[in-house]
Length: 540
Image 1 (tube, rainbow, N blue to C red):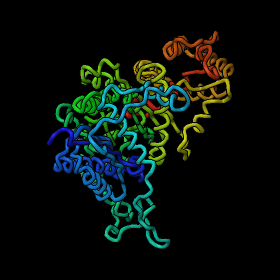
Image 2: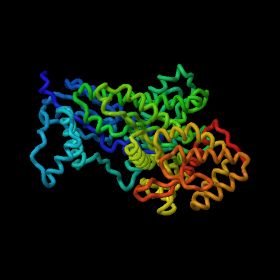
Image 3: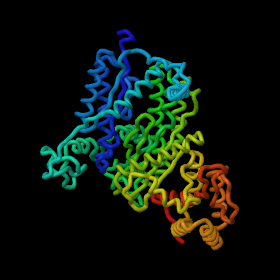
Image 4: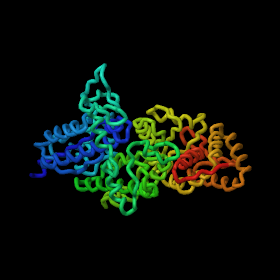
Protein backbone atom coordinates (compact mmCIF):
# COMPACT_ATOMS: atom_id res chain seq x y z
CA UNK A 1 0.00 0.00 0.00
CA UNK A 2 1.04 3.55 -0.55
CA UNK A 3 2.02 5.68 2.44
CA UNK A 4 -0.86 8.12 1.98
CA UNK A 5 -3.33 5.27 2.57
CA UNK A 6 -2.35 5.11 6.23
CA UNK A 7 -3.60 7.21 9.15
CA UNK A 8 -2.56 7.38 12.78
CA UNK A 9 -4.78 5.70 15.39
CA UNK A 10 -4.32 6.56 19.06
CA UNK A 11 -5.97 5.23 22.20
CA UNK A 12 -5.88 5.27 25.98
CA UNK A 13 -7.54 3.08 28.62
CA UNK A 14 -10.19 4.94 30.63
CA UNK A 15 -9.73 5.17 34.42
CA UNK A 16 -6.99 2.57 34.34
CA UNK A 17 -6.03 2.93 38.01
CA UNK A 18 -9.66 2.65 39.11
CA UNK A 19 -9.82 -0.76 37.46
CA UNK A 20 -6.46 -1.99 38.79
CA UNK A 21 -6.96 -0.77 42.38
CA UNK A 22 -10.72 -1.37 42.64
CA UNK A 23 -10.22 -4.30 45.03
CA UNK A 24 -7.67 -4.20 47.89
CA UNK A 25 -6.03 -7.63 47.56
CA UNK A 26 -2.62 -8.10 45.99
CA UNK A 27 -3.80 -10.88 43.63
CA UNK A 28 -6.58 -8.56 42.44
CA UNK A 29 -4.21 -5.65 41.87
CA UNK A 30 -1.59 -7.80 40.20
CA UNK A 31 -4.24 -9.58 38.13
CA UNK A 32 -5.88 -6.33 36.98
CA UNK A 33 -2.56 -5.00 35.74
CA UNK A 34 -1.77 -8.29 34.00
CA UNK A 35 -5.11 -8.45 32.20
CA UNK A 36 -4.55 -4.97 30.80
CA UNK A 37 -1.13 -6.09 29.56
CA UNK A 38 -2.78 -9.09 27.91
CA UNK A 39 -5.20 -6.71 26.19
CA UNK A 40 -2.22 -4.87 24.71
CA UNK A 41 -0.85 -8.15 23.36
CA UNK A 42 -4.21 -8.96 21.78
CA UNK A 43 -4.64 -5.55 20.16
CA UNK A 44 -1.08 -5.67 18.77
CA UNK A 45 -1.96 -8.94 17.09
CA UNK A 46 -5.26 -7.60 15.75
CA UNK A 47 -3.70 -4.44 14.32
CA UNK A 48 -0.97 -6.50 12.68
CA UNK A 49 -3.59 -8.77 11.08
CA UNK A 50 -5.28 -5.70 9.59
CA UNK A 51 -2.03 -4.47 8.05
CA UNK A 52 -1.24 -1.85 10.69
CA UNK A 53 2.12 -0.93 12.20
CA UNK A 54 2.92 -0.42 15.88
CA UNK A 55 4.59 2.84 16.89
CA UNK A 56 3.93 2.69 20.63
CA UNK A 57 1.92 0.40 22.91
CA UNK A 58 2.51 0.32 26.66
CA UNK A 59 1.02 1.36 29.98
CA UNK A 60 -2.55 1.59 28.70
CA UNK A 61 -1.72 3.93 25.81
CA UNK A 62 -0.96 3.14 22.18
CA UNK A 63 -0.28 4.66 18.78
CA UNK A 64 -0.58 2.72 15.52
CA UNK A 65 -0.34 3.46 11.82
CA UNK A 66 -3.32 1.73 10.18
CA UNK A 67 -4.91 1.54 6.71
CA UNK A 68 -7.42 4.37 6.38
CA UNK A 69 -10.16 2.06 5.10
CA UNK A 70 -9.81 -0.24 8.16
CA UNK A 71 -9.43 2.35 10.90
CA UNK A 72 -13.05 2.19 12.07
CA UNK A 73 -13.06 -1.63 12.19
CA UNK A 74 -9.80 -1.63 14.15
CA UNK A 75 -11.19 0.92 16.59
CA UNK A 76 -14.27 -1.17 17.30
CA UNK A 77 -12.18 -4.34 17.61
CA UNK A 78 -9.91 -2.71 20.21
CA UNK A 79 -12.92 -1.55 22.23
CA UNK A 80 -14.30 -5.11 22.24
CA UNK A 81 -10.95 -6.58 23.27
CA UNK A 82 -10.72 -4.51 26.46
CA UNK A 83 -14.35 -4.93 27.45
CA UNK A 84 -14.40 -8.68 26.83
CA UNK A 85 -11.07 -9.43 28.52
CA UNK A 86 -11.63 -7.31 31.65
CA UNK A 87 -15.41 -7.17 31.93
CA UNK A 88 -15.52 -3.46 32.81
CA UNK A 89 -12.45 -1.59 31.50
CA UNK A 90 -13.09 0.65 28.50
CA UNK A 91 -10.76 2.37 26.08
CA UNK A 92 -11.03 5.58 24.08
CA UNK A 93 -9.77 5.31 20.50
CA UNK A 94 -9.51 8.02 17.84
CA UNK A 95 -7.96 8.19 14.40
CA UNK A 96 -7.29 10.72 11.67
CA UNK A 97 -9.95 11.36 9.04
CA UNK A 98 -7.35 11.45 6.29
CA UNK A 99 -3.58 10.95 6.03
CA UNK A 100 -2.90 14.66 5.81
CA UNK A 101 -1.18 17.15 8.08
CA UNK A 102 -3.48 19.50 10.08
CA UNK A 103 -3.94 22.98 8.58
CA UNK A 104 -1.39 25.59 9.66
CA UNK A 105 -2.33 28.14 12.30
CA UNK A 106 -3.21 31.61 10.92
CA UNK A 107 -0.40 34.11 11.21
CA UNK A 108 -2.32 37.36 10.65
CA UNK A 109 -4.28 37.45 13.92
CA UNK A 110 -2.71 39.70 16.53
CA UNK A 111 -5.50 40.93 18.84
CA UNK A 112 -8.05 39.43 21.21
CA UNK A 113 -8.41 35.80 22.24
CA UNK A 114 -7.51 34.53 18.78
CA UNK A 115 -4.18 36.32 19.04
CA UNK A 116 -3.53 34.82 22.45
CA UNK A 117 -4.23 31.34 21.14
CA UNK A 118 -1.82 31.89 18.26
CA UNK A 119 0.90 33.04 20.67
CA UNK A 120 0.30 30.03 22.94
CA UNK A 121 0.57 27.77 19.91
CA UNK A 122 3.82 29.40 18.84
CA UNK A 123 5.35 28.80 22.27
CA UNK A 124 4.96 25.03 21.89
CA UNK A 125 4.95 24.82 18.13
CA UNK A 126 5.86 21.38 16.88
CA UNK A 127 8.95 20.93 14.76
CA UNK A 128 7.33 19.18 11.79
CA UNK A 129 4.16 17.77 10.25
CA UNK A 130 4.43 14.43 12.10
CA UNK A 131 4.58 16.13 15.51
CA UNK A 132 1.65 18.37 14.60
CA UNK A 133 -0.44 15.42 13.45
CA UNK A 134 0.19 13.60 16.73
CA UNK A 135 -0.59 16.75 18.74
CA UNK A 136 -3.93 17.19 16.96
CA UNK A 137 -4.72 13.51 17.44
CA UNK A 138 -3.95 13.77 21.16
CA UNK A 139 -6.30 16.76 21.41
CA UNK A 140 -9.01 14.74 19.69
CA UNK A 141 -8.40 11.90 22.16
CA UNK A 142 -8.86 14.24 25.14
CA UNK A 143 -12.06 15.61 23.64
CA UNK A 144 -13.41 12.10 23.03
CA UNK A 145 -12.69 11.13 26.66
CA UNK A 146 -14.58 14.15 27.95
CA UNK A 147 -17.58 13.45 25.73
CA UNK A 148 -18.03 9.80 26.72
CA UNK A 149 -21.62 9.33 27.87
CA UNK A 150 -21.87 5.54 28.39
CA UNK A 151 -20.07 2.97 30.52
CA UNK A 152 -20.45 -0.77 31.21
CA UNK A 153 -23.33 -1.36 33.61
CA UNK A 154 -23.91 -4.43 35.76
CA UNK A 155 -27.13 -4.25 37.71
CA UNK A 156 -26.89 -4.90 41.46
CA UNK A 157 -30.19 -6.07 42.92
CA UNK A 158 -31.30 -4.81 46.35
CA UNK A 159 -31.50 -8.39 47.63
CA UNK A 160 -28.73 -10.75 46.72
CA UNK A 161 -25.15 -11.63 47.52
CA UNK A 162 -22.58 -8.99 46.61
CA UNK A 163 -19.02 -9.70 45.47
CA UNK A 164 -16.72 -10.37 48.41
CA UNK A 165 -13.95 -8.30 46.81
CA UNK A 166 -15.29 -5.14 45.18
CA UNK A 167 -18.62 -5.07 47.02
CA UNK A 168 -20.19 -3.32 44.01
CA UNK A 169 -21.38 -6.08 41.70
CA UNK A 170 -23.43 -9.22 42.32
CA UNK A 171 -21.58 -12.47 43.00
CA UNK A 172 -21.89 -14.44 39.77
CA UNK A 173 -23.64 -17.84 40.00
CA UNK A 174 -20.71 -19.47 38.22
CA UNK A 175 -18.26 -18.26 40.85
CA UNK A 176 -20.31 -18.64 44.03
CA UNK A 177 -18.03 -21.27 45.48
CA UNK A 178 -15.60 -19.52 47.86
CA UNK A 179 -12.26 -18.73 46.25
CA UNK A 180 -10.54 -17.51 49.40
CA UNK A 181 -11.63 -16.79 52.99
CA UNK A 182 -15.19 -17.77 52.09
CA UNK A 183 -15.56 -14.86 49.64
CA UNK A 184 -17.86 -15.22 46.64
CA UNK A 185 -16.81 -13.13 43.67
CA UNK A 186 -18.32 -11.36 40.70
CA UNK A 187 -17.06 -12.29 37.26
CA UNK A 188 -14.76 -9.25 37.02
CA UNK A 189 -13.03 -9.91 40.34
CA UNK A 190 -12.85 -13.65 39.66
CA UNK A 191 -10.94 -13.05 36.43
CA UNK A 192 -8.52 -10.68 38.17
CA UNK A 193 -8.09 -13.06 41.09
CA UNK A 194 -7.28 -16.06 38.93
CA UNK A 195 -4.83 -14.05 36.83
CA UNK A 196 -2.99 -12.60 39.82
CA UNK A 197 -2.95 -15.51 42.26
CA UNK A 198 0.31 -17.46 42.12
CA UNK A 199 1.05 -21.00 43.24
CA UNK A 200 4.22 -22.15 44.98
CA UNK A 201 7.23 -21.69 42.72
CA UNK A 202 5.22 -19.67 40.20
CA UNK A 203 5.77 -16.00 39.33
CA UNK A 204 2.70 -13.93 38.49
CA UNK A 205 2.77 -10.56 36.73
CA UNK A 206 4.70 -9.81 33.55
CA UNK A 207 7.23 -7.46 35.14
CA UNK A 208 7.72 -9.63 38.22
CA UNK A 209 8.48 -12.55 35.93
CA UNK A 210 10.90 -10.51 33.83
CA UNK A 211 12.71 -9.34 36.96
CA UNK A 212 13.01 -12.89 38.28
CA UNK A 213 14.22 -14.33 34.98
CA UNK A 214 16.77 -11.53 34.71
CA UNK A 215 18.43 -11.96 38.12
CA UNK A 216 17.27 -15.14 39.90
CA UNK A 217 19.98 -17.44 38.57
CA UNK A 218 22.92 -15.05 38.49
CA UNK A 219 22.14 -13.53 41.91
CA UNK A 220 21.04 -16.83 43.54
CA UNK A 221 17.62 -15.48 44.46
CA UNK A 222 15.57 -18.07 46.39
CA UNK A 223 12.72 -16.12 47.95
CA UNK A 224 9.11 -16.79 47.00
CA UNK A 225 6.67 -14.31 45.50
CA UNK A 226 4.17 -13.11 48.14
CA UNK A 227 0.62 -14.38 47.82
CA UNK A 228 -0.92 -11.30 49.43
CA UNK A 229 0.02 -7.98 51.02
CA UNK A 230 0.26 -9.49 54.51
CA UNK A 231 2.88 -11.92 53.24
CA UNK A 232 4.72 -9.08 51.46
CA UNK A 233 5.30 -7.23 54.76
CA UNK A 234 5.65 -10.38 56.87
CA UNK A 235 9.39 -10.00 57.43
CA UNK A 236 9.20 -6.31 58.38
CA UNK A 237 9.24 -5.21 62.02
CA UNK A 238 6.05 -3.21 61.47
CA UNK A 239 3.35 -3.85 58.89
CA UNK A 240 3.87 -0.62 56.97
CA UNK A 241 3.43 -0.71 53.19
CA UNK A 242 4.73 1.88 50.72
CA UNK A 243 3.12 2.83 47.41
CA UNK A 244 5.83 4.02 45.02
CA UNK A 245 4.65 5.99 41.97
CA UNK A 246 7.26 7.42 39.59
CA UNK A 247 6.94 9.23 36.26
CA UNK A 248 9.20 11.00 33.76
CA UNK A 249 9.33 14.80 33.80
CA UNK A 250 7.96 16.82 30.87
CA UNK A 251 7.94 13.90 28.44
CA UNK A 252 5.20 15.64 26.44
CA UNK A 253 7.57 18.47 25.49
CA UNK A 254 10.11 15.88 24.40
CA UNK A 255 7.57 14.19 22.13
CA UNK A 256 7.01 17.50 20.35
CA UNK A 257 10.58 17.28 19.08
CA UNK A 258 9.96 14.00 17.24
CA UNK A 259 10.16 14.22 13.45
CA UNK A 260 9.13 10.73 12.29
CA UNK A 261 7.32 7.54 13.35
CA UNK A 262 10.67 5.75 13.50
CA UNK A 263 12.10 8.31 15.92
CA UNK A 264 8.89 8.16 17.99
CA UNK A 265 9.34 4.39 18.20
CA UNK A 266 12.97 4.83 19.25
CA UNK A 267 12.00 7.28 21.96
CA UNK A 268 9.21 5.08 23.33
CA UNK A 269 11.56 2.07 23.37
CA UNK A 270 14.19 4.14 25.20
CA UNK A 271 11.65 5.17 27.83
CA UNK A 272 10.14 1.70 28.23
CA UNK A 273 13.37 -0.29 28.33
CA UNK A 274 15.33 2.35 30.25
CA UNK A 275 12.63 2.67 32.91
CA UNK A 276 12.34 -1.07 33.30
CA UNK A 277 16.11 -1.53 33.58
CA UNK A 278 16.35 1.31 36.11
CA UNK A 279 13.69 -0.25 38.33
CA UNK A 280 15.06 -3.78 38.09
CA UNK A 281 18.54 -2.64 39.07
CA UNK A 282 17.21 -0.59 41.98
CA UNK A 283 15.21 -3.52 43.37
CA UNK A 284 18.15 -5.88 42.96
CA UNK A 285 20.60 -3.54 44.69
CA UNK A 286 18.36 -2.65 47.63
CA UNK A 287 16.34 -5.84 48.18
CA UNK A 288 18.93 -8.39 47.01
CA UNK A 289 19.89 -9.68 50.49
CA UNK A 290 16.27 -10.58 51.30
CA UNK A 291 15.73 -12.23 47.93
CA UNK A 292 18.71 -14.53 48.55
CA UNK A 293 17.21 -15.97 51.74
CA UNK A 294 15.64 -19.40 51.36
CA UNK A 295 12.06 -19.43 52.64
CA UNK A 296 11.76 -15.64 52.56
CA UNK A 297 9.23 -13.63 50.55
CA UNK A 298 9.78 -10.76 48.17
CA UNK A 299 9.46 -7.43 50.01
CA UNK A 300 7.90 -5.86 46.91
CA UNK A 301 5.58 -6.44 43.97
CA UNK A 302 5.91 -4.66 40.62
CA UNK A 303 2.41 -3.60 39.61
CA UNK A 304 3.25 -1.80 36.39
CA UNK A 305 6.04 -0.41 34.24
CA UNK A 306 4.35 1.43 31.39
CA UNK A 307 6.54 3.72 29.33
CA UNK A 308 8.05 6.10 31.88
CA UNK A 309 5.46 5.23 34.59
CA UNK A 310 6.30 2.93 37.50
CA UNK A 311 4.07 1.60 40.28
CA UNK A 312 5.51 -0.68 42.97
CA UNK A 313 4.16 -1.89 46.30
CA UNK A 314 7.07 -2.36 48.71
CA UNK A 315 7.93 -2.68 52.37
CA UNK A 316 8.28 0.78 53.91
CA UNK A 317 11.85 0.20 55.08
CA UNK A 318 13.15 -0.22 51.54
CA UNK A 319 10.98 2.37 49.79
CA UNK A 320 13.17 5.51 50.03
CA UNK A 321 16.35 3.72 48.93
CA UNK A 322 14.57 2.05 46.00
CA UNK A 323 13.05 5.36 44.89
CA UNK A 324 16.42 7.15 45.03
CA UNK A 325 18.18 4.33 43.19
CA UNK A 326 15.45 4.24 40.57
CA UNK A 327 15.67 7.98 39.83
CA UNK A 328 19.45 7.77 39.62
CA UNK A 329 19.32 4.76 37.30
CA UNK A 330 16.50 6.31 35.25
CA UNK A 331 18.60 9.29 34.26
CA UNK A 332 21.47 7.03 33.18
CA UNK A 333 19.52 4.24 31.46
CA UNK A 334 16.98 6.39 29.60
CA UNK A 335 19.36 9.11 28.42
CA UNK A 336 21.94 6.67 27.07
CA UNK A 337 19.22 5.01 24.97
CA UNK A 338 17.83 8.24 23.51
CA UNK A 339 18.15 8.91 19.75
CA UNK A 340 21.14 11.15 19.12
CA UNK A 341 19.09 14.01 17.74
CA UNK A 342 16.64 13.93 20.67
CA UNK A 343 19.51 14.11 23.19
CA UNK A 344 20.06 17.69 22.09
CA UNK A 345 16.65 18.62 23.56
CA UNK A 346 18.02 18.15 27.09
CA UNK A 347 18.60 15.70 29.92
CA UNK A 348 15.58 13.52 30.74
CA UNK A 349 14.65 13.33 34.43
CA UNK A 350 11.91 11.77 36.54
CA UNK A 351 10.05 12.29 39.81
CA UNK A 352 8.69 9.92 42.42
CA UNK A 353 6.02 10.04 45.12
CA UNK A 354 5.90 7.71 48.14
CA UNK A 355 2.93 7.09 50.42
CA UNK A 356 3.37 4.86 53.48
CA UNK A 357 0.54 3.43 55.58
CA UNK A 358 -0.47 0.26 57.37
CA UNK A 359 -0.90 -2.74 55.12
CA UNK A 360 -4.65 -2.71 55.85
CA UNK A 361 -5.02 0.83 54.51
CA UNK A 362 -7.04 0.82 51.22
CA UNK A 363 -4.61 0.76 48.31
CA UNK A 364 -6.94 2.87 46.18
CA UNK A 365 -6.52 5.70 48.71
CA UNK A 366 -2.76 5.25 48.63
CA UNK A 367 -2.85 5.58 44.84
CA UNK A 368 -4.72 8.89 45.00
CA UNK A 369 -2.36 10.24 47.65
CA UNK A 370 0.74 9.06 45.78
CA UNK A 371 -0.47 10.84 42.65
CA UNK A 372 -0.76 14.12 44.60
CA UNK A 373 2.64 13.63 46.27
CA UNK A 374 4.16 12.96 42.85
CA UNK A 375 2.75 16.26 41.55
CA UNK A 376 4.53 18.10 44.37
CA UNK A 377 7.79 16.36 43.46
CA UNK A 378 7.31 17.36 39.82
CA UNK A 379 6.96 21.02 40.81
CA UNK A 380 10.29 20.78 42.61
CA UNK A 381 11.85 19.00 39.64
CA UNK A 382 10.67 21.72 37.26
CA UNK A 383 11.95 24.52 39.51
CA UNK A 384 15.36 22.90 39.97
CA UNK A 385 15.61 21.22 36.55
CA UNK A 386 16.42 17.86 38.10
CA UNK A 387 14.82 14.65 39.35
CA UNK A 388 12.87 14.98 42.60
CA UNK A 389 11.27 12.86 45.31
CA UNK A 390 8.66 13.40 48.02
CA UNK A 391 6.83 11.25 50.56
CA UNK A 392 3.92 11.06 52.99
CA UNK A 393 3.70 8.72 55.98
CA UNK A 394 0.40 8.00 57.72
CA UNK A 395 1.31 6.41 61.09
CA UNK A 396 -2.39 6.64 61.96
CA UNK A 397 -4.77 5.58 59.17
CA UNK A 398 -6.92 8.44 57.92
CA UNK A 399 -9.31 7.65 55.08
CA UNK A 400 -8.61 10.45 52.62
CA UNK A 401 -7.93 10.93 48.94
CA UNK A 402 -6.58 14.47 49.42
CA UNK A 403 -3.01 15.26 50.49
CA UNK A 404 -3.58 18.86 51.59
CA UNK A 405 -5.56 18.10 54.77
CA UNK A 406 -3.05 15.44 55.77
CA UNK A 407 -0.10 17.82 55.36
CA UNK A 408 -1.58 20.39 57.75
CA UNK A 409 0.03 18.50 60.61
CA UNK A 410 3.37 19.82 59.34
CA UNK A 411 2.10 23.42 59.28
CA UNK A 412 1.49 24.47 62.93
CA UNK A 413 1.10 28.11 61.82
CA UNK A 414 1.43 30.26 58.72
CA UNK A 415 5.08 31.08 59.42
CA UNK A 416 6.41 27.64 60.37
CA UNK A 417 6.78 24.36 58.45
CA UNK A 418 8.03 21.06 59.87
CA UNK A 419 8.73 19.60 56.41
CA UNK A 420 11.39 20.36 53.80
CA UNK A 421 10.05 17.93 51.20
CA UNK A 422 10.11 17.54 48.21
CA UNK A 423 13.82 16.82 47.74
CA UNK A 424 16.01 16.99 44.68
CA UNK A 425 17.67 13.73 43.69
CA UNK A 426 21.05 14.93 44.97
CA UNK A 427 19.61 15.81 48.37
CA UNK A 428 17.58 12.58 48.56
CA UNK A 429 20.67 10.56 47.69
CA UNK A 430 22.70 12.18 50.46
CA UNK A 431 19.86 11.51 52.89
CA UNK A 432 19.79 7.84 51.88
CA UNK A 433 23.55 7.29 52.00
CA UNK A 434 24.76 9.49 54.87
CA UNK A 435 21.95 10.60 57.16
CA UNK A 436 19.17 8.00 57.36
CA UNK A 437 21.33 4.96 58.30
CA UNK A 438 23.11 7.06 60.93
CA UNK A 439 19.96 8.48 62.55
CA UNK A 440 18.34 5.03 62.42
CA UNK A 441 21.03 3.88 64.88
CA UNK A 442 20.04 6.57 67.37
CA UNK A 443 17.72 5.46 70.19
CA UNK A 444 14.12 5.36 69.08
CA UNK A 445 12.95 7.17 72.21
CA UNK A 446 15.23 10.11 71.41
CA UNK A 447 13.91 10.35 67.84
CA UNK A 448 10.36 10.45 69.20
CA UNK A 449 11.25 13.11 71.79
CA UNK A 450 12.77 15.31 69.12
CA UNK A 451 9.76 14.90 66.83
CA UNK A 452 7.43 15.97 69.63
CA UNK A 453 9.67 18.95 70.46
CA UNK A 454 9.66 20.16 66.85
CA UNK A 455 5.87 20.33 66.93
CA UNK A 456 6.07 22.74 69.93
CA UNK A 457 7.69 25.51 67.90
CA UNK A 458 11.06 26.96 66.93
CA UNK A 459 12.52 28.04 70.28
CA UNK A 460 11.08 25.13 72.25
CA UNK A 461 12.62 22.64 69.81
CA UNK A 462 15.99 24.43 69.84
CA UNK A 463 16.17 24.46 73.63
CA UNK A 464 15.01 20.87 74.04
CA UNK A 465 17.32 19.38 71.39
CA UNK A 466 20.28 21.44 72.59
CA UNK A 467 19.67 20.23 76.15
CA UNK A 468 19.42 16.63 74.93
CA UNK A 469 22.70 16.95 73.03
CA UNK A 470 24.47 18.46 76.03
CA UNK A 471 23.62 15.32 78.05
CA UNK A 472 24.67 12.95 75.26
CA UNK A 473 28.22 11.65 75.18
CA UNK A 474 28.04 11.75 71.37
CA UNK A 475 26.31 15.13 71.37
CA UNK A 476 29.00 16.86 69.32
CA UNK A 477 28.74 14.26 66.56
CA UNK A 478 24.98 14.63 66.43
CA UNK A 479 25.29 18.42 66.40
CA UNK A 480 27.71 18.19 63.46
CA UNK A 481 25.26 15.94 61.61
CA UNK A 482 22.48 18.48 62.09
CA UNK A 483 24.71 21.21 60.67
CA UNK A 484 25.55 19.06 57.64
CA UNK A 485 21.87 18.22 57.16
CA UNK A 486 20.82 21.86 56.80
CA UNK A 487 23.80 22.66 54.57
CA UNK A 488 23.01 19.71 52.31
CA UNK A 489 19.26 20.03 51.86
CA UNK A 490 18.94 23.68 50.87
CA UNK A 491 22.34 25.39 50.91
CA UNK A 492 20.99 28.61 49.35
CA UNK A 493 18.40 29.11 52.07
CA UNK A 494 19.09 31.46 54.96
CA UNK A 495 20.04 29.57 58.11
CA UNK A 496 18.96 30.93 61.46
CA UNK A 497 21.72 31.81 63.91
CA UNK A 498 20.79 29.57 66.84
CA UNK A 499 22.93 27.04 68.74
CA UNK A 500 21.23 24.03 67.13
CA UNK A 501 21.26 24.50 63.32
CA UNK A 502 17.98 22.79 62.43
CA UNK A 503 15.98 25.74 61.10
CA UNK A 504 16.31 27.81 57.94
CA UNK A 505 14.19 30.42 56.20
CA UNK A 506 12.86 30.47 52.66
CA UNK A 507 14.86 32.69 50.29
CA UNK A 508 13.96 36.38 50.24
CA UNK A 509 11.15 37.05 47.79
CA UNK A 510 9.63 33.57 48.05
CA UNK A 511 5.81 33.51 48.14
CA UNK A 512 4.61 33.12 51.72
CA UNK A 513 8.14 32.63 53.15
CA UNK A 514 8.36 30.28 56.13
CA UNK A 515 10.85 28.98 58.63
CA UNK A 516 11.44 25.31 57.90
CA UNK A 517 13.29 22.26 59.14
CA UNK A 518 14.38 19.04 57.43
CA UNK A 519 14.90 17.26 60.76
CA UNK A 520 11.37 15.87 61.08
CA UNK A 521 11.58 14.44 57.55
CA UNK A 522 14.84 12.77 58.52
CA UNK A 523 13.40 11.38 61.75
CA UNK A 524 10.43 9.89 59.88
CA UNK A 525 12.61 8.36 57.17
CA UNK A 526 14.93 6.91 59.81
CA UNK A 527 11.91 5.42 61.62
CA UNK A 528 10.81 3.76 58.39
CA UNK A 529 14.36 2.52 57.76
CA UNK A 530 14.42 0.71 61.13
CA UNK A 531 11.49 -1.43 59.96
CA UNK A 532 13.88 -3.45 57.80
CA UNK A 533 14.35 -6.95 59.21
CA UNK A 534 18.16 -6.61 59.18
CA UNK A 535 18.37 -3.27 61.07
CA UNK A 536 18.99 -3.43 64.82
CA UNK A 537 17.72 -0.57 66.94
CA UNK A 538 19.74 1.01 69.75
CA UNK A 539 18.18 1.56 73.16
CA UNK A 540 19.01 4.32 75.62
